Image 1: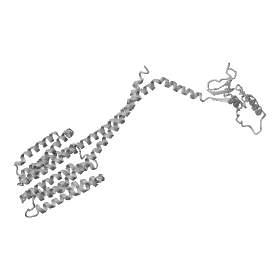
Image 2: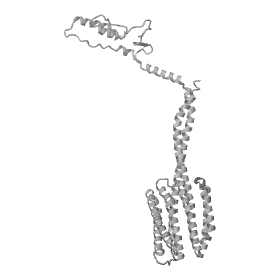
Image 3: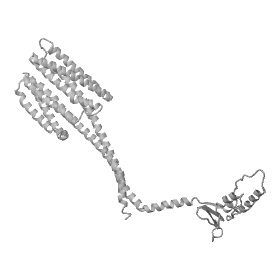
Image 4: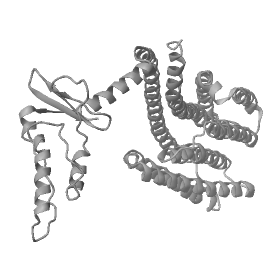
Length: 463
């Protein structure tokens, strides 16, 4: 029954040791898993933005070509067909991204609505006026930018520290809106060049768009500088692109002011407007692609780091649990081999050995050479014959100790040597009746000795 009660005790000890470790391991693993899933969601959001970026680029080109064709420029028709095919290819790629990341991002309804909007636009823009076709494209692109913002929020792109925060913010909320404003300015300027005139509403709209373009360009530049402050390694590859984006936008605005807004009459050809507007858009898309590649690489590094930390935490917890399982039978068997009574007996034996170890063994010849020092007794300066005689008697009585006679005692009746005799007799050297030859015993609190016949030694100890 005693052995059966060992297992519950061992299990209780192991649980007391394991539970805190298991709790800390759970917290560590849950934290690493949360970080891992968050980084995976950010990666999905960035890949989704990459697909939407292609749609935005080709849809802007489709808008410009549709405006030119509806304005009477037949040379835009081949380009319009090419851009429609490019958008169809982009949608096919987005179908794959939706299948891969749609469940993570929850974009099923959004993607279905985007498909429907494109089908409606492709079917209707042929029968619209240039301004109406441009408005259809603007609404469609506005809905795509809204989807970009939603994906950025749902995947928590900007909820990171360091350079990735500024990169994600630039991609989703600065650079893509700037590209769309550039597209609107480009389309409006191209229509103005085709009509060779500009109305007051179009002039006000063009001025407002160029103002937005400057604000967004400054935001892109400021975010890029903050990115370089946190990660100087990105400056070498992106600083020139940021500069090109800023210069291209400023040159395009200067071109619009010189050719469309300031002169009394418009003589610029649509092809010049197309070429001038294409440069800032190309520079902006190049900067977008470079920053997207950088943030994708940084996010993948975080995913790999989180995966490695998860593996280390899992291995550590598994090793601790395995060690506990292995140690459980070993601990139980150890307690079975040495139960509590055996431990108590061992402790008692240790006490006994410690007591015995205090015994001293002295040789007989050493004992015979021991002398008893008699403390000096103060005497008068004039010696008294009575005192001398008492001291002489005391010396004769106790001198047998030097010869090994431990039974001798001093007379305590003498007034002079009474104190000395009592001190000597206090050791209570008495011979026990019936002792073996060579053995002298004492009672409790007394000294006993034992003659060792084999080694001719006398062993004694106080008890």
